[in-house]
Image (tube, rainbow, N blue to C red; front, top):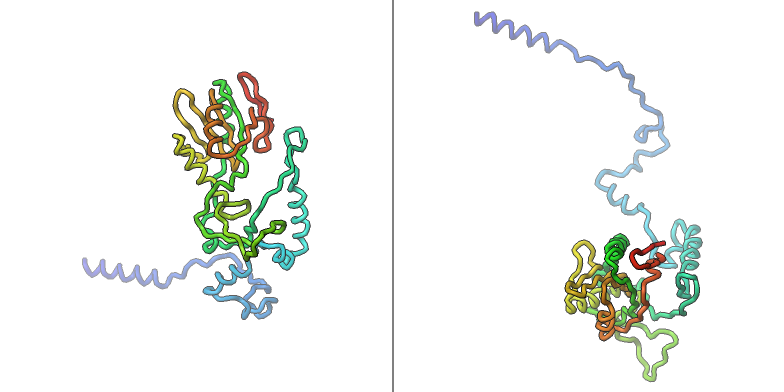
Length: 284
């Protein structure tokens, strides 16, 4: 009995060994332009080995020029003049209101921030900016409650923020000094300095926290102070939207620290035209 089973096993194994696998009916066609074929237009010697492909990708990837000179010497240099003209045309030298009338002519002392190098001249450049949906949420919250919605502008906001880094500037054109100096030591932030927005946000936040305001968890540019005369703030660079029943006290309070311009009831913020009525606020 054992011999029969053993013999049957050997027979089945030998039968499986001689059985050929089923051949595919698909026809394999290799084109004449395969890159590894001699007849191809691509020389196989020019194909980079696997360990060098990462270097090739870094070399061949498109990069954006950082200066005017780099743009004019880029491979796609013929496309950059139009982009530069578009950007310059979009820069209004006259500040305008919602009726497109000139409010004031504005001039600023700006740093050549494009000459700064991260890790050498500054560490962080990111600064929080209020989200539009946060502003819309505050408006939707304030309208049915009859809260006032005012706007204030902090004059020369960045100039209030002290710098933690050592920054030196060339003497700007138009500034005449009695003493001959090679450079100026910058103690506080100015516009176009890479770290200026973050320095200003830190300066303003420090004051708000000292005034018993708390930052929102979901948006670090929304602040709230609880109490009978509760106040909600929305920050956007040097503009502050103020929501509350009694906001005159807050205006007086912040004016002791910063120079402000009281714009009254908000009518234009982030390019959005605002119309306020007794129980509703319209956005256009």
